[in-house]
Amino acid sequence: MHFDLNEDQRAFQETARQFSENRLAPFAAEWDEDKFFPVETLREAAVLGFGGIYVKEDVGGSNLSRLDAALIFEALSAGCTSTAAFISIHNMASWMIDCFGSEAQRRHWLPRLTTMELIASYCLTEPGAGSDAASLRTKAVREGDDYILNGTKAFISGGGHSDVYVCMVRTGGDGAKGISCLVVEKGAAGLSFGAEERKMGWNSQPTTQVIFENARVPVANLIGAEGDGFKIALQGLDGGRLNIGACSLGTAGAALEAARAYMLEREQFGRKLSHFQALQFKLADMATELEAARLLLYQAAYKLENKDPKASMYCAMAKRLATDTGFEVVNEALQIHGGYGYLKDYPIERHLRDVRVHQILEGTNEIMRMIIARNLLKP
Image (cartoon, rainbow, N blue to C red; front, side):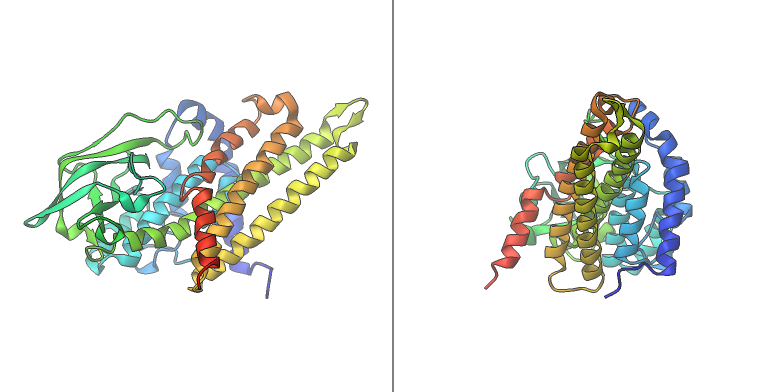
């Protein structure tokens, strides 16, 4: 059992850290304030290999491991949580095409997705199907060489801006077995988008409804076979949960460092904050809980990469712990900053707004507990 990163992993991590420090952090507050989607910066990240982190090399991917991806997203999110999270979503959608698509589909989309010439979104959630994803109602009816789609997807990151939408739709009966995976391209007849949602955080990425009104999509865009969609979605979400957990760790790490620096600088009652034992203990607990969450997430990434039969349970455990811990650490960092932490002059309040949603998306943390309990109670 080795806990040290290898030379390549340290290199990936350092590359991501430098990109985060130089190309994300200086602009994150402006992007948040202006609700600006930094597509050109995303493409700069793709030049470094971050547009297809675990996509195979023959189509331009980096073919890295799930642990490598976690290291990268943890480093990127320290600079801008929202932008790092969008890169994660793009990677998840691209991986679905790489893993389950035909050779023709891989060759058609992935060389441009790995460079982020094309931007990808993932469409599962609907207005009436959130945690109960298997109840989705977006319908795809075959008509000759096309499917005709009707329905609405909700909370879609990149909606209206992305070029490729990896969508879970109903081609069969009720339940999980009736769900299939279709790629819908921007500009498809009958595809439209709702107004951009006004969100608490994640403001450097647009979020809209994706609306299908007799949208015509070629049968050739079916990923896998009819009925494979829910299986594809769940496998994609295992990795997505690790990535979003890593984003929470990276943001919390940045908040922890900001709190540490503030304690060494700020004086009250004639002493530095770092001299007050109550705050020392708070900082110690923050660092300890963060390290524990990090180790679990790295273990889950290893298990997913190596196809451990309990990998999905560990991914749920890691996502639950990392996102809950991440939020608590950021919240405590804000408390240490006092009133200054509540001001937009400091990044802490943005960190708090951005990490809060991580406890909801990629499966709420209540759903994570259900997955864990179901695995524990198997006969």
